Amino acid sequence: MVWERLLRWRNQAGSNSFAITISRCSHVVALALFVFALPQQVRSETFSQFVNGLRAEALALGISARTFDSATKGLTVDPSIDRLTKRQPELVKPIGGYIGRRTSGSMLKTGRGRVKQVRRLLTRIEQRTGVDPYVIAAIWGMETGYGGNIGKSDVFRSLATLAFKRYRDDFFRREFFDALLIFQKEGVARSRMVGSWAGAIGQTQFIPSTFRRYAVDFDGDGKRDLWGSRADALGSAANYLADLGWIKGQPWGRPVRLPNGFPRDAVTLDWADWRSFGVTSANGLAFPRTGSATLFFPAGAEGPAFLITANYDIIREYNSSDSYSLSVALLADRLRGGPAVALNWPTDETLNKAQRMEVQRRLAQKGYEVPNRTGRIIKGVRKAIRDFQASIGVVPDGYPDVELLRQLRV
Ligand code: CA
Image (cartoon, rainbow, N blue to C red; front, side, top):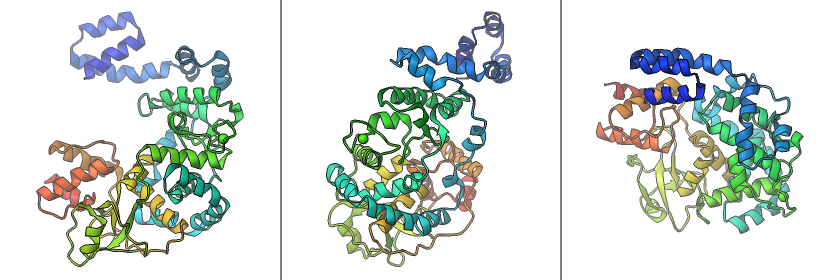
């Protein structure tokens, strides 16, 4: 593995004399050279050389020289990216406070005003896509404060910087080319190619590849304008969720109250069965007549309980964090006129990123399938935690806390 990376690097560097030196080295010496040489190799290429190096590939993808030059003229590295890539608010704040701030106060007040303004649009979105339009409105609120903050960073500068720094490998390099294709095909003015520091575009913050695949001209003016057209932005978000498999007529789920002593397992049952077990809605919104839902404890068995449907998983595709997805879900219910719900979130300290990564590493060492090692607690990681918890006979709530880490260290 290391050897393959080394060879790949050698090919990129294209230094014959050095290549011969490496080929005669032992793996250990080669590894030392690799570790030592790689940063120098990266440093030796300037940002403008890197950007110029993207030109041939762009032209091969059908991007015109004029488009490429217009996008990259005078482009400089964004020095704030290093700091921003280390900041992920939904990963470090305790879930209860995070959700509380996003489902009350100005988020709710502004949201209610915006929902009134776009009520007819929301109806059309529901009719044409089958997606819950209040979930779309909540995503709009979460992403850009209902269109108020679509970002001011130059999309090409952000994406080129992220690609240059090889943040997430080649991911942003591909997004850079997709941004060029959007710029060329959608007839967007150069000055309008702005977005978040990570290159997300428009009122619902699509990354360029998602824009290319899922954006729709919902208002029918011939352009896909996710910056200026609320209809295009919200219609595109709904089109995206519909394509991911949104089930028409099913809610995302419900916050629920459980009978005393109810088992905490993540079982999936029909709504009618949940009702027959005495499980009730905690926010006054009735359970649907059809469909099924899974019991979920986003903050552990001592925290609030939810029944979530496959549509909740669709929201998680937009952003894999449960803090984000539950904020969208609960905000959507408030925007549709649902009552405030008092959820008793635990205030204990949550694990930091290094500790969550240790949880993932130890689960993997014990043979559990762990979908990422980056500290992100996504659905598959929770399943691995539940399986481990079940194996040692503790409540399988899938929640990574200090207790779990202690159990894993045994
Ligand atoms: Ca349009």
